[in-house]
Length: 329
Image 1 (cartoon, rainbow, N blue to C red):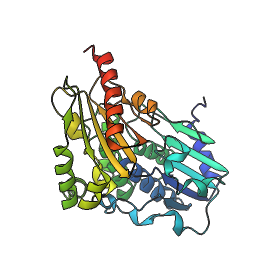
Image 2: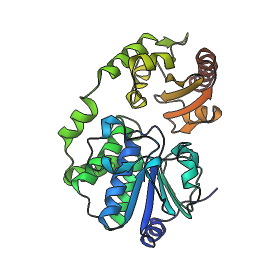
Image 3: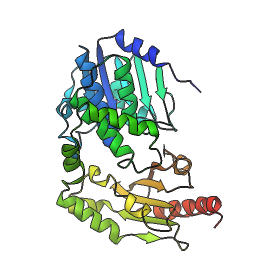
Image 4: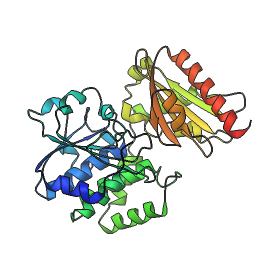
C-alpha cells in the first residue's frame, strides 16, 4: 500500500505547474463542493489556471457559495490540463463515469481525501481518515502554500466541515475540527448566510421526499436496524433530485434503540444506492465494502443492481447479522 506524501511534496508538485483541473466525486455533497470551490479560489488567487469540474452541476443548495459559478461540467471543456487534483474521492472512478475518460491522460494526479477506504491512486496522495472532512485538508494545503484565506474561501471550507460533521454532532468531530472552524470564523465566515441557505431553504420536493421516506420506515424485529426506501417512480413523480437526499438517512438512525440506519434509493430502474449510518458500535464501512462500496466507520454507501425488494432483503439481512455480532444481541 502506498504511503502518504508529505505536504511539502504536494506543495512542490503544485508549484511546478500552472494549469490544473480540480475534480470531486459524483453526486457531490457539501464536503465535496466546499473543497472544490475552496481550492479553486485559493489556487486561482496564486495565479494558477484552474478548471473545476463535477460530473453534474453544483447542487442547488450550494450555488449560493461564491465561486460555485466556476464549476463546470465535462462537456463544457475543450481542453484538459495534464495535472489533476482529486478531492474527496476514495478511488479514481468515484468522479463518475462521465469524467473518468477525460482524466485518463493526466500525467500528474494529486489525491487529497479523508476516506478510510481510499485506494491511494494518485502520484501524490494525502489521505487522513482521522480528519473529519476533506475541506479541512484543503485549508491545510492552502495555508501551507501561504494563500490568504478570503471570506469566500472560508465560507466554502466551513460548509464542507459543517456538512460532513453533521453540524459538529458526529463522532468525527475532533478538538482540531472545532479549532479550525473557529479560525474560519475569524476569516469572515457568514454564519447567517450559511444557516439560511443550507438548513432553512428546503424545496417542496424535499418536503414530499421526507414524507415518502418516513412513510416507508421499517424496523428489524429487535429494533436495532431501521430503513427507508424510495423508488425511482416515486422520485420522478415528486420531482426530487439526488441532492435532496442529503441528511435524510439520519431520520432512521436517530430513533431510540436503532444502531444502524439504512436508506435505499432507486436512482434508475434496477439500480439501488444504499446509504448506511451507525451510532456507536458498528463499522458500516466494512459492511459497505462487502457490497462493493466504502466510506467511513459511521457513514458509508454502496450501489447494487437488482429489484428494490431483493436488494433491501439482502442488505437488511447482512446488516442485521453484523449488528447482532457487534452488540451481542
